[in-house]
Length: 273
Length: 148
Image 1 (cartoon, each protein chain N blue to C red):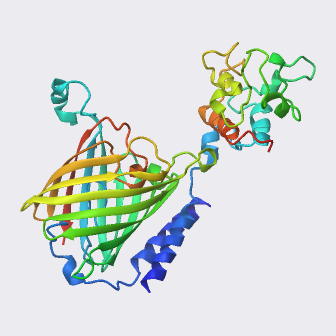
Image 2 (image 1 turned 90 degrees about the horizontal axis):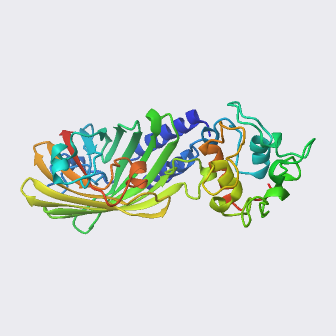
Image 3 (image 1 turned 30 degrees about the vertical axis):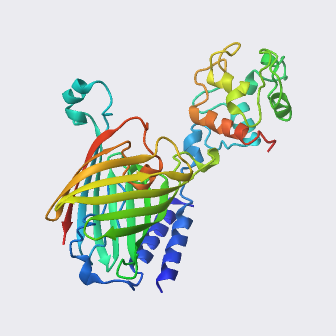
């Protein structure tokens, strides 16, 4: 398949997702704050939060690449807990283009660009315990000029009052292996993202996520992390600790460099609605 | 109506899955190299790279000389000279052990690993085979070193 054709198909995919009828849409609710699910991401995994039509949101992800366990505490303090070292940075923007449907783009500092679309299929309500959102994405390295890695998945969530939200996210990533398929045993990854956000104070949350790779290409360590975050109006400030830097689906599928190391990072998000 | 749309979206996404990294990006100076014996024979054994890596058959031939190391890699006999064949220079070493590239002596000689007898191949190198070329050769061995 030629690259231009692949790009056209990608656009077609996103278009189909975007213009699917919003049967379950209740747009009047989507702009309201959901105390148990205040943001569009956990640490790297997406949540099932819907974006109101024509609303948008911005996210900065920042992962310092210095292992927190390298050297003694004095060394760590001297490096200001990793902040003196390099980092993998991501910028994301998402836009609600139809009720319950959103598209977005995430670019990370390793020149990876991910386009994604999410569509709310089922809404949690009395009598229906779960919220389900479909996820599709495609990303490519070298500013989307390199090989393309599409992903399909579902975000299944359960909000518990205004206190907590839990997530199970089965996701399949194609071309997760950076090597050509002709020289590898596995070129896809099937992973299941598991996560939770718990509100411990009116505007303070504890977040955790873990994404075991169930089958396929599984290098490195399984990505996971914990975070503490503070909501301030339309902003969310998150300080996180994880064993990997991934924020796109392919990066998560490729895992972390070494499961014995932890890294400091932060997310800052802002809603525009 | 929603389900068909999602199904179409999924289908489109799967279709896009063909956008894999091209093998030629890995093969470097031999862009047509594939993990098949015919390709290894033509691209590695019989060809000199554009970067100057010498063809194996410059020395490993019985045309006008005795094959270096007792290994003849000319067309038509090379496969039977390497697959499941013991190296006469290193007792116990198998030149190509189907399914086991790491323990195939041919790979060890091309990578210049410790423990080989003599020097890294090609003897006139560098340039040696690139990591990508060796990876493709290893893949052919990992697939069972078929006569394909």
